[in-house]
Length: 299
Image 1 (cartoon, rainbow, N blue to C red):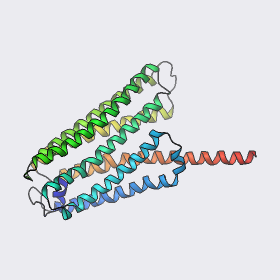
Image 2: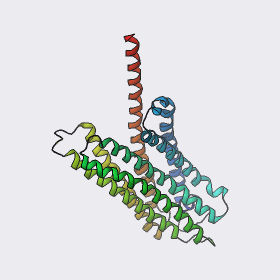
Image 3: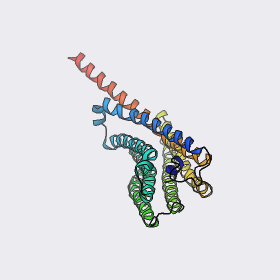
Image 4: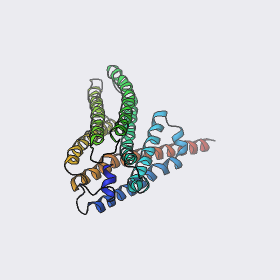
């Protein structure tokens, strides 16, 4: 409920610095516009390249739909933050809605990242030594179990909120702390999996049987490193937000961290991954066109 309180002065004036309500309102509006255009950037190519997407492997098409749905959830999140306090009168329900609207999109984006990592593992199965491939195959199972666990934690956090909000206590920070610790654990564990994948790539690509590393392999290697760093940064931000929230909610440092997390940590990586995928779909369209043209010429 923290962000709802930061935006709507009717919920609580406590702990909200002078003039910060408007700043939070404009910041959330900016995020809403940003994610709306990012959603269109993801949705339009699905419509345009629908035939090419149908030809993709199950994991690759799942990644595309996963990111698109995650962006849709982000739009719902920003809209809920802006309008939730105007249509929900119960403080208890408002706290639950505030938590769900903020946390669920991040959990879903995390799932999308695990799908990306699984697809990279599948690719690496073709280029890495067998002993490394065996380890990576076990990592796929770990990622599936990981997704089950994080959603159990998410549901558990909602259950905790139901318990501590009877009667509602707007000053109770239990849910905020618990959800933050869940977020930190979620991101730290996935960071460790990414780090192990980086080590596996380094060992596999550095094997004596590999005389030269291709540009594509280097891009893959650096992409994994960047995503791992972003996951670690997101976890660190969650930890910092816990301590900031204990002293003063909605201040300028809390605002800066939220905007940085929304735009830089979660938004920009989605844009880059979508841009890469859009380029791939476009190349598949050109390949199909060239094959069809050559077929007609040969006739």
